[in-house]
Figure: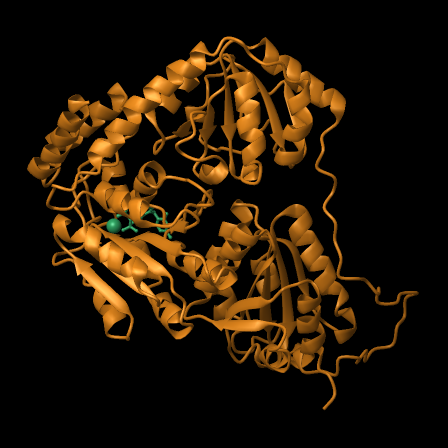
Length: 588
Ligand SMILES: Cc1ncc(C[n+]2csc(CCOP(=O)(O)OP(=O)(O)O)c2C)c(N)n1
Ligand SMILES: [Mg+2]
């Protein structure tokens, strides 16, 4: 049996080190599936239940391993389903390759069944977007696609018509009329050097040295630079504020961090941003500029990998281009040791109060169950190198504040797209890459329900992922957003009773447990984490627990009160929660 063109594509993926493809077959990719079947010794195919999840898994693979993630979908609807996950990759700058099927070349443009111009559809999401018209384009197009995804940190897309997929791998059916020959390329790529210019670094050192109250804002681009961040913070006597995507940069119990920033950040970080005169941004493109110092208030320097993004959020005197780790390493010897550490100490004192306040919210004695308590227990029982994946919603606030980075722990969520539902597919994608590691998906009931069938994927692949559902029977985040606008909530709560998601697990042979009482949380999470296979812990939490900002502004409180006056339902229970939190706060 001769080689088919799909094999040239699949083998080339393997040459690039790809060992896993996430996807779902269809009549538009039977040839590609045959290519995968013939080379299953080199690449495993992970069969999912929804293509969107396959794209999330590929994105998570890239986030957790640094290597390109690959997903595969059939022509038309399959390719359309991938899109949300691909935008997640694009917005969080992750190298992902999407491979899709296309109608056979003889019927293109005739309105044949499922004819969707996926190359046109993907024009906005993809950095590289190419249809295969001739097997002679392979494998070079694969090389170009993967190199582009890495270099531009984004999505590459290759779509392959059905007839080309099964054509002879060495077919080149048409006469060559130009002085062209298909390029013979190699599956190699080296990133550009990441060390910024010395003269630029000297300017950064001078600027940071001249500040009185200096802080560092570190993001996902500094996740690999923990040691260097801490060393720079020590030299500058500067606290490190972390974006949510950059949560794993430095441990949460480090004396040098004031934790997160923004709506789900900490009060000490908010206060610090109002007081500093100098800001050093490292590996971050933090989009919520309202939470950065007001224009003209600080002098800023930055280390950023992409010149197009450097200086894009705040007026930056020295927007240095380079890799965070290499840049900080080269900067360190240029920095002078700061003698006066009073600003850092002030921040540390505030953090002590904040930590006590957070610990008080992890109240084991509350029924309905406090969501903060659930994450608190998870945090206590998880291993020191556990990976936590999370959905968008109130869960992101609870995880930001109560999941503590320590040891080799990691934290991943959809940072910039902030889509619902990636938590569980992320966990599955990461567990495939790290079979021995504890991988926990901490998700909302809304997000879980969207891609619920992927729990079955975890069962079928015998993946020991642990899924913890913060089940508030509502789209909690939006409920509070509506109230903060001054409007009573509308259309954000699901009718009671709470859904029993644990039954999905137990009915299909996995570990599942429904938790309704605070007294049962600890043992349920303990059992779930100890279980050798997939486990689902579905916890009914208090739906009237607001994720308050670290520092409630007068305007926010006023709008909240307006929503109450305009007829916000469940006023009494919400007020009880608010009041109780206040009491806990006052206790400290
Ligand atoms: C695909 C998608 N649809 C809608 C939204 C808007 N949205 C953001 S958070 C949220 C609520 C999520 O509900 P759930 O997963 O139950 O989490 P909770 O906020 O209740 O903790 C919604 C609807 C979104 N971000 N993504
Ligand atoms: Mg919810």
